[in-house]
Image 1 (cartoon, one colour):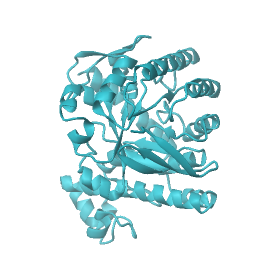
Image 2 (tube, one colour):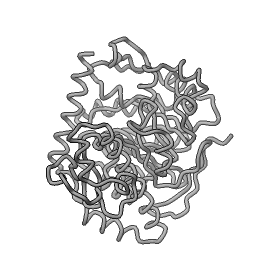
Image 3 (tube, one colour):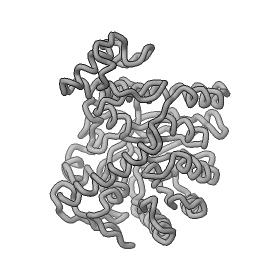
Image 4 (spheres, one colour):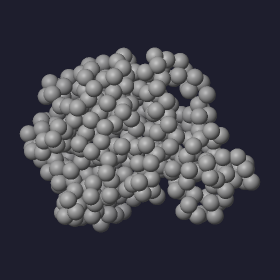
Length: 391
């Protein structure tokens, strides 16, 4: 069985293509919802598929810790365990180890870390990261990488680039399954020359696709796009490019223009559970008092289950009453919004009018205030580290 084939259908800086995987054929550019623990929170697999998703993400780190690789393997793999018929991508767990920095020690051999669940000690090597992901059976698996902090010194980031390259080579050698595609992860912080060094070194190893990691973790949006554009410039034209952890609509619009084919982020589902809903004019806070008694849908013209069957006022009530249906409807809405956005992006590229589409979208869309966003991101990372440290 062929692990992956990728065919460009419309080339250029913004491009469309078809990604053929063992469990699905996926049109690109695509967005992957994040189901770290083998679930898209609040939704069933059938609901996720009905929205239009054929490729979703799960996480090696989380599933290794709970329920454990042997449990998943006992079901015949992750597809059977979670009841998902579409394609799967599993992250190696490198980012989770980075984000739980107080609990880990990195050496050339691998990463020793303490579980954020019970404090037990574990070790990940590149070889073990591949072994566990092979047992899960995802269509695309990721090489173990070292994701340095964005504010790290040049020496620290240079060392992470070298280690990430070495680990990618070891992952490639450890891989045994022919029905899985292995992607390496390009690192280098905000140093363009280190990013290019990382990209060019990994391209020389001839992987079927390439991921850009270590972005959207505290830098400005302009920096994210600048680094992404520099990297995609040196990546093979005929292989998929995956920008990890980016899920803001405005960032996706700009990254597609830089040549990115694949995205993932927990953002749409995470903010949904806090009442933040995407619209073409920007995010709204459905908990705000202005929506009390509002008989209109969340967004006029939206065909998601929340908008076609319920009013904004009703969803507002559900959040105020702390009813779980509110979380489900908000998640359905945000994932539908992202699916529709990606379809519109593909349509605009095929029609040769992506530049106009992007300008119009960005002119109408009000992004979260940049200062507030960066502050929230840093606070989230700090809170996560504190929680992990007390585990």
